[in-house]
Image (tube, rainbow, N blue to C red; front, side, top):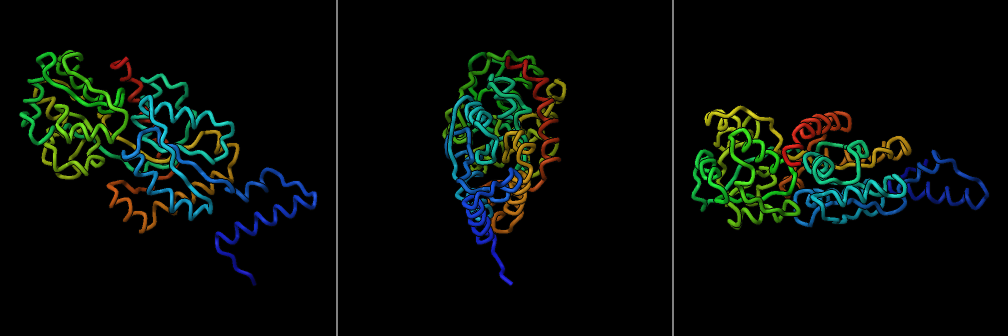
Length: 336
């Protein structure tokens, strides 16, 4: 009995399909789907190279290529705080699985829609896996004069004294504005400096070009030696950073606790119509993604790149980001 490897089986199917075509036999859509993918797959990252989403896409491209049997390439389409790349993916002529999106579903995709005005809807996308759920921190450079969160807050009360790096409308930006509102500090007291992507955002803080940022903690692992953490934007301190929790710090200053929205939930997304129009392809893609992320080789590669490698699955992941989107939607008027 002949035995086929995954790659040789795909070649056999493609050859057989071609032979049937020459013989005048027309394959149905379901039968043709068995041969998918035949063309290269593109993972669109809607930010510049170097950020955590870009690094994740590049760690996934080679093992996904091996699983699916076609080249998987990464394409950076920065602009609009993620909105331009997301719009490009949503507007592909067919949601056939050949163009995927990798970004922080929350807060970046959510805020590209809620704040940035991207001409797409939340329901246009389906989240395949919450591969990396990264909490946020309030951080300053090691050379900063601000030793504590209280000292930073006191400086923020003086108009124009303090600057903060942001991606406009992202979780860190919103978290800062929400905290300032709770502390009765006018939003225009802080000089917000806008960056287009996580890499330049981290570079600015590591270079002491801005006074503080609310950024994803594990995404900042490569620059953590340059930073002082003033508060942990989470309901616990999972990495033992030793700084107070943001809400504890707010309460100690006489403010009320606020929603936690500063972190990032990152993974692969697809146009939502792909699942309903190409269910076999959808199942094949999810299976390949799960195989890659749960492999020991990928976990090692992700760790070396400073990335998460969790497999949560489509249903639980979608609920996670839907809940976060609802919270962000309620707060988006803080920016608008």
